[in-house]
Length: 365
Image 1 (spheres, one colour):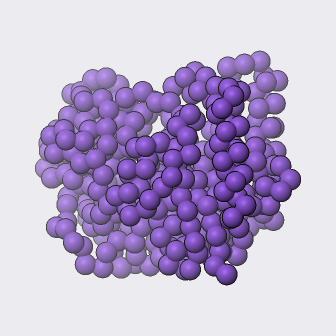
Image 2 (cartoon, helix red, strand yellow; image 1 turned 45 degrees about the vertical axis):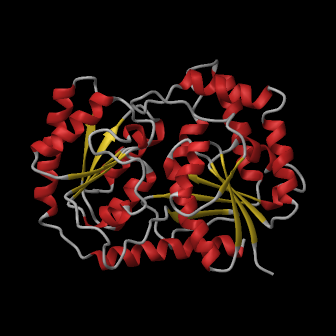
Image 3 (tube, helix red, strand yellow; image 1 turned 135 degrees about the vertical axis):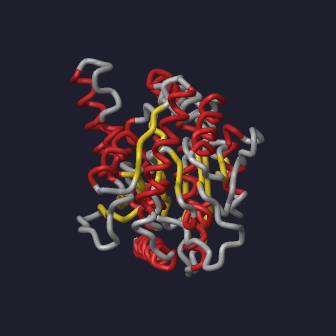
C-alpha cells in the first residue's frame, strides 16, 4: 500500500508553501498519496499556481507583519493567545485534524502550527506527527517572549514548546547551509532546505536581476526605490511580490522564478531559508533586504559567516538612501560574481540531491 501523508504548510510566508509544493510533487512521483492543508486563502491560491490543490484548515492562526515585513510581536502574541484559548479555534482544528489522521500514516507540520505541536505530544496522535522547521525559526520561536514577560514565563514557554516538539514521532530541522550527509540524532534529522530544480533549457530569456519579495512587503516607496536602484546599476529586473502585484511590472507569483534565479546575474530577496538556499545551490550573488524578523536576521548573519556572496540592504524610510544601497550592492556583487561563474548543471545536481534526501527520509518514516 502506498504511504498516505497529510502535509500542513502554514501560509505566514511563502517559504513554507514553496517547500511544500516541492516535496509534495516529489513524494507523489515516488508513489506516496499526499493531501495538503494550509492556513489562508491566499496560500491556497499560491499553491494552485504550482498545481497543488490545498484544503483550508482555518485562518485563525497567523504571524503578524507590517507592510515592510517587520514582525509585529504584540499583535502576533495576541493572535496566538486567541487561537489557543478561544473555543472553536485550536480545539476545532484539532478535531478536524484528528479525523484526517485516522486515514493517514504521517502528518507533516511545516512549521510549528500550534494544533499539531499539541497533538504531537498526545498518545495515539504523536506517533504520526513529524515537525519540519528551519533551524533559525526554532531559535526565534523559543526566544519569542524573552524580555516581554518576567523571565520565568519566558523560560516556561520555551520549555513547553521544546517538550512538544521533542515528543513527536520525528523532527526534520532544515537549514540553507546543511549538507545532505549531516549528522542525525535519534528522531532528529538535519537536512538542507530543498530547492527547485532549474530547467535544463530555460523556457524564458535570462534576466539580469531576479527579485522576490514575500507578501508582507507592501510599502510602495520601498518597491520603487528597489527598482530604481537596480536600474541605476544598469540591471534589468524580473520582479515578483504578491504585495506589489500589478505595480510597475511586478508579478504576484512566478512558478518559473527558480529557473530565472538559477541563470540570473543577481538575486534580490529577504534572507529567508528558500532564497538563501537558491543562492547557495546555484552559486548566485544575492542582495538581502533585511527587516525586523528574528530568524531572517539570524540567517543574514550566518550568510556572512559562510562567505556566501551577498550584501545586506536595510529600508529605513528614506527612498533615496535605499536606492543608493541597492545600486552600490548590485554593482559590487556583479563585479565579484564575474570572477566566480559556474554552470547551472552543477547547481541542478545539488538541488536534486537535496530533494532526494527529503523524500527518502519522509518515506522511511
